[in-house]
Length: 438
Image 1 (cartoon, rainbow, N blue to C red):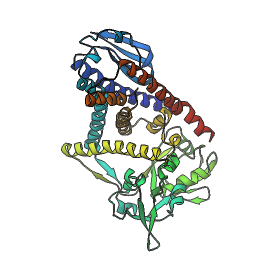
Image 2: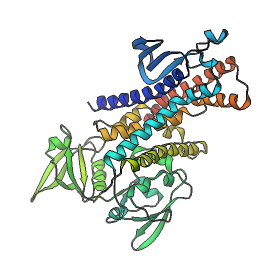
Image 3: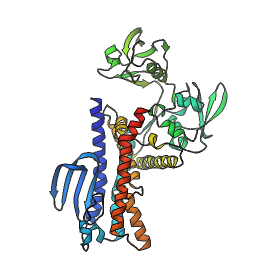
């Protein structure tokens, strides 16, 4: 069931994003009087199609993208039959370069606007919930293996980032810090201040999902929600239970629970809980991933920052473009050899896992907003088969006054398609195989 929920969320998110992206191309093309032959969400074979006016609207069986076919344009269909004739007034190639440029940027612009709109509305509706740095400093942090490797120790209190005090604990994971050069944390340990530098290959190491939260606040907790049918539910765990021991390990903070459950992965494990004025011993069958199926409720005091609509617009815009900035920095790391391609590129399976097996509207729209900005960024890359390739050639035409020949554009499109198909094969087939084997 979890797999179906994850797949359903991925398909819904992609359908929304592909739909608005291709609508951006179609609407700008029609605005300038170009004939749009097809509008498709998904790639062939066709599942459903209906012609309205001059345009056939389609649903394709392969839900990993979509396309708009504009008459007189060399695109991924490589249909060049009409290019041997004189251009008709309604063809893409008959229009001025600036109009063609707007059409090619239309999908990217709409994806950016969609991302900004999503983050603006989420910020306005939910505000911003955060753990104040002072609250996280009450008990300090617990590092995972990656955190220990770079110098963190259990109980460290992070007091500064890059030499400056910080407001909320999530600033510890800020992309400007983990991807920046010369970044460092200052921690208080046994009454001393110690600087912990961030290594250059830090992003590569964080690419492992288990290592991303390299430090977590020591977080006293109680059970919040028990997943029906899971090991915790079957073993008798209830909301508001306080877990005090797992096996032989005493538990006070949630990261300690996570570590103890991983040690007992795949085992029937005695778990001692405090329930009201009672102390009970339950037996929970810990799954192979070291989980038992419940959500914790932190006893740390979180704060919420509320926004008016006028305040939410710049805050949402900043969030949206922060994702693009992170993408740019990540690509810079890859090109400098500081991060591996195989660990940095994820496919549909990884995206579906991020959506999770439980439908949560806040999480769904947050991830969909992020994907909208990533899609805009990726489509702007100067690869011939992408929008960015067309933008590159159109910019050259506008600056030089010379239009590349249709034959050149056709061959460039073929090269771009080979590059894209190779990348898709790597992301969908080779990379998951490498990760599985290694």
